[in-house]
Structure formats: structure tokens, C-alpha cells
Amino acid sequence: MRRWILPAAVVAGVIAVFAAAFTAARYYCDRKAPSFGREYVLYVYPGTDAGTVIDSLVSGALARRRGSIERCAADIGLEDNVTPGKYVILPEYSAAYAVRMIVNGWQTPQNLTLSGTIRSKGKLASVIGRQMMVDSAAVAAALEDGEFLSAYGFTPENVFALFLPDTYEFYWTASLEDIFARFRKEYDRFWTPERVSLAEKQNLTKLEVSVMASIVNGETLEASEYARIAGVYLNRLHKGMKLQADPTVCFCFDYTLDRVLKKHLRVDSPYNTYKYYGLPPAPINVPPKACMDAVLSPDEHGYLYFCASPEFDGTHIFAVTYNEHLRNARAFQRALTARQKAKDRQASQL
Image 1 (cartoon, rainbow, N blue to C red):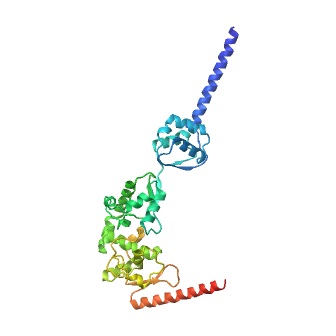
Image 2 (cartoon, rainbow, N blue to C red; image 1 turned 180 degrees about the vertical axis):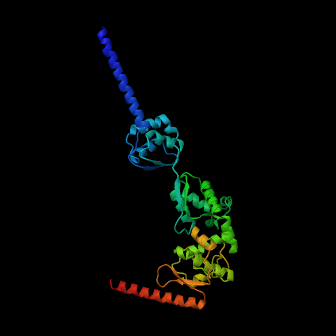
Image 3 (cartoon, one colour; image 1 turned 135 degrees about the horizontal axis):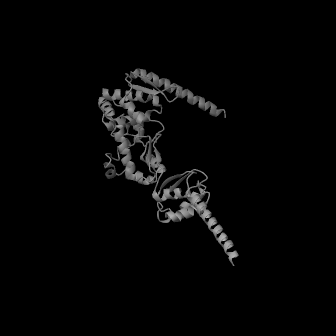
């Protein structure tokens, strides 16, 4: 009888060892071992359930062991704690860490970038909505909501001045209020005492700097010309001349004009700088910081006029007198006519 006791004990011991090893291996796989095959950005929307999150980790992040994800989800409580957010899952993360990120809301910051030409509230809302969880329709509505905007010191008419193009770091789930508050903070940060002093030197308010910068932005895509063009318009403003800026007329027609013609210059709008003296009441687009700084520190020159270069390279030819400007304008028109004739000849030969 005794000879069977030792083998049974040995078997039991072996089983216990294997069980412990299995448990340790599972713990290591679930809690310590790298669990994913690639870096993956997981966006968790409100209302997303645990099953959808697990499926995304398996298919998107290429989870090596679905069982590890499921066990950790059960142990950590994912079912009742799916927290919306943007989560970057790295290959070296364990299953437990990835699940814990989502349960605890350990979001990865999201970059919100404003760039390019933004000439409408619809475009501005779309740019923000594409990059953040907030719906673009909600942003568009906020941009027209005077009561909402008053909390940030702006109105539906002048709200373009609030937004300074750059790249900003947010959490993807930031609320509408969070987003506008952040842009107000960045606006205040931009307006250092030095910049306020420069604006006063030009006899401009902060809003007027934004308005002038938006005109400069509407005139050229060449950053090297910002300060020179700003100088032209400031020269006109300080001399009491009409600004006569084509971009302001285009704004009156919601930027639908291919060319500004004489009939368009008669539109009765406070934004028509051919009809009314001084600056328009608000910005006509979202001006870049570089345009703002160009207005604050313009080139000092005597130019009062400019027109497009006959080289068609996006630059302009500047003039001090109106007669000189007329010569430059005629040179551009001749070059434009010759260019069009060349295009017509090429088309006829096809």
C-alpha cells in the first residue's frame, strides 16, 4: 500500500507545478508581455461597448492573444468603464495596460492644426470637426451664437480674430467650451506687452490688427511679401486714403468671384474698401500669425500701390505714385493677354 503513496504524491506535485507554471505564464502573457503587432490609434466614441473595443484591439492593433485581452477586460472592469478618448496602442504594451488605459481614460494628446486659407466659418468648423470628437455642426452653430461667443470676448462677426493658425495639443474628447477657451488663452498669450505696444505705434487696436492682417493674407500667398504689403495698406490708412483692397470685395460676394470687375466695386457693404474709408469692421478670413506680425512690424517704405507681377510667380510689383502703378498694371495686362493668346494657340493645335 505504501508504494502507491509516493507516486500519487509525485503526480499531485507535478500537477501543482504545471498549474503554477501555467498560471504564471498566463499572468506574464496578460500583464507583462508585449501584446500587439503594430502601433494603432484607437478612437473610442461615447456609447462604444467593451466588445467593440476588444475587436478593435484584435483587428487594428493586431493583438497577439485575444484571450489575454478578454481576461484583462473582465478582471479590470472594461464592460462598465469604457472611457471615450484617443488611445495610441504601442506594440510593447501588455494587454492589461492597454485595457487599463481605456478604463482609466489615459488618453494620448491630439494635435489640432489650423493651417491654409480659412475664409469661411464652415471651413473653420470643418477643420476643427475633422480633428476632434466635437461635431463640426456644433462648431458651426457656436460660431454663429452671439451669447456663446460673448463668454470669450468675441461676436459672430469678428470671431475669425480669435483663431490663430498653429498646431495645438488637446485631448480628442475636449468639449466645445474647452476648445474655445483654449483658443482664447492662446489669443491672450499672443498679445504680449511688446505686441500691444507695436499695435499702439500703428494706432491700431488688437481687432484692427487682425482685420488688416486678414487683408494681407487675402492679397498674397508669399510670406516674404507680408510685411511689404502690410506697409502699403498702413501707408494708405495713415494718409486717409481708401484701402481699395480686392479681397474685401471678394468677401462681400462670399469669395465666389473669379475676377473683381468695376461693377463689383459698387457693392454697398461696410467691407467694400473701394466705397468706404478705413478698415472693415471685422477680419475677412483667419489670418496667420505671420500676417499679424507683419502688420505690427511692417516694412517702412513709401509704396502706396502694387499689382501682380508679369512674371506670374505669385509676387507683386510695388509703386510709390499712381502713374507708376498704371505703367506696372499695363505691363501685367500685356503679359496676361500674351499668355492667354499662347494658351489659345496651343489649344487650337490639339
